[in-house]
Length: 245
Image 1 (tube, rainbow, N blue to C red):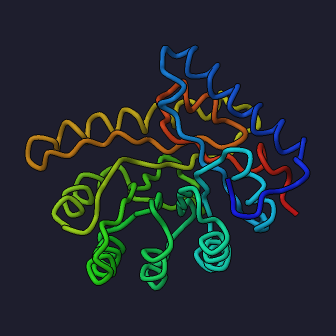
Image 2 (tube, rainbow, N blue to C red):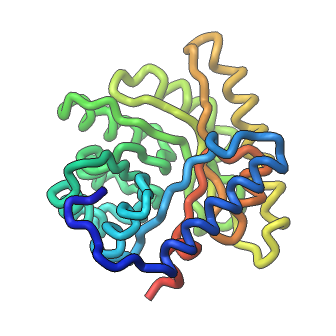
């Protein structure tokens, strides 16, 4: 529990969390998987510290932020006010190289590694901080210009480069496909990432011993389909905290 426990439970927040976990369980079972193999990342973009503390009181332990700058004060406040449970912070949004130093200081896991240059920056700052920085490589499976990530044809080179960086630990892949009103339209993108991961793992495992167990894919609108296609992390904001203000 957090150090300052809410006296009044936010019933809407509680029901949202229960509903998301229920959907995670059903999607995992439908695809023959263990629901406990899927991690819920509660995305707190524009969500205030008081609401985050309520979510912690209700059992959430993994939170995702889209921007380094917005995350700084939230994470600092949480670390000061919440002392009796372990909370993980993930960066799920795009990361610029000039924010790498701060990102290493703030985040347990960075989902959005997309270039060798950024990897070198993260490794440099992690070494200075005597930290092993956990990362996921973001793969661009959509042709949208606004989407970030490494192109499929450059993925193996990036994985090989990261694999020899002593202060980075590569744990898997992430993607953010085009948004569709019909979540079934996103299924081919999730399936593609899983297949890309399987091929990449096979390609580099003998030389580098790398396993890539994590697949971060799926948000409020399409996370059930993502789980059916192998997601191990789903990034949920609106489904937990409601529409952004």
